[in-house]
Structure formats: C-alpha cells, structure tokens
Length: 197
Image (cartoon, rainbow, N blue to C red; front, side, top):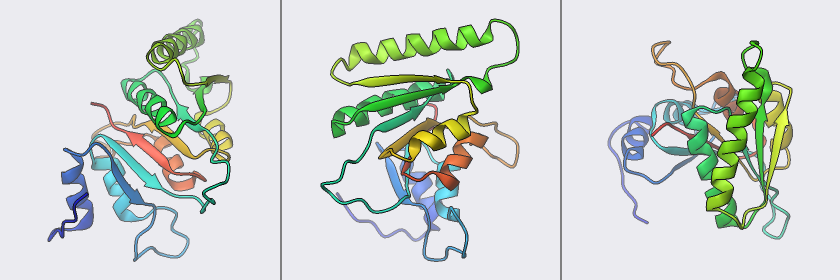
C-alpha cells in the first residue's frame, strides 16, 4: 500500500487512478456532505465516471465476530452484469461467504418468450461461474419483481451487493443505470459497481 497526495480535485484523481486499479474503494459521504444527502458528490462522480470495480462503502458498523451475511449479486444478462457475477463469485470465495444471485424478471421486455430467454441466459451464466468456483454455495433467485425492490430486500442481510453499471452515455454524461443509482443511494450495505471492460 502506498499513500499519494494529489493536487487535483478528489473525484478526478480517483477516476484517473481507477484506470489502473484492481478496485477503487471510497466512502458514501465526504466531509462536506449536506444534511440528508445519501451519496456524496465524490462517490457519485467516481461510480459514474471511474473505471473497473468501484466499491462505495455504506451501511452500519458490524462487530468482527458477527455473522456478516451473504454476498449478493444482481444480474440482468448484460455484459456488465456478467462482470459483476465474476466479482461476486471472487468475493464469496475470498470471504468464504455464501452467495445469492438475483435476476429480476420485471426488466424483461413484454414480448412472449423473452422471460424464458432471460431465465436461460441466467442459468448459463450461473453454470459457467459455478464450474469455475465449485466450492461456492450459490443460491439462484429468479424473482418477478423490479430489480430495485428485489435487490434492496436481499441487501438488508448482505455484507456486499455487486451489480453491473448498465447505463446510457449522452444523457448528462450519465453512464449509470437507474438500478445502480438507486443502490448507491439507498443500499443498507456496501455496493460494488462493475463497469464494462
């Protein structure tokens, strides 16, 4: 570990260094957090514009000997969620923690057969990761609700929530999707945002 004093704004410094980092970790709020603000401007900026794996630490303190809960991953079949699933399995292995993987079907388009395709892609993605990590006990959850409410419910007991950053470029340069933004603002546990490679 090394310490560096940057002479540029914190968000720009962290975004720049995230390009070469294995993971960028920061708190949810900074020194200048306004009352009632759920996410500081620096973590928001880094999560939206940084690269790779970005973890925003939020939630309450937990005793070392307390049950830390599972790792939770939210997947939707996008390339970013594939990368998120990889990180979730790696973190579960590292922490020797159980893993819960949530695929919310409310995001599936309302065309006949698309839900079946989403379920099939979810099954294939899970099977690939379970082959690489046979020692991880992973629970698959296909849920009919919205991604936000489904992830928020399982995050209540989680030690880490891992999701992909699936957003659209061009709209105020916003590259985080609505689910990622909601989790960054309201998740009761730390959130890992995985940007597409």
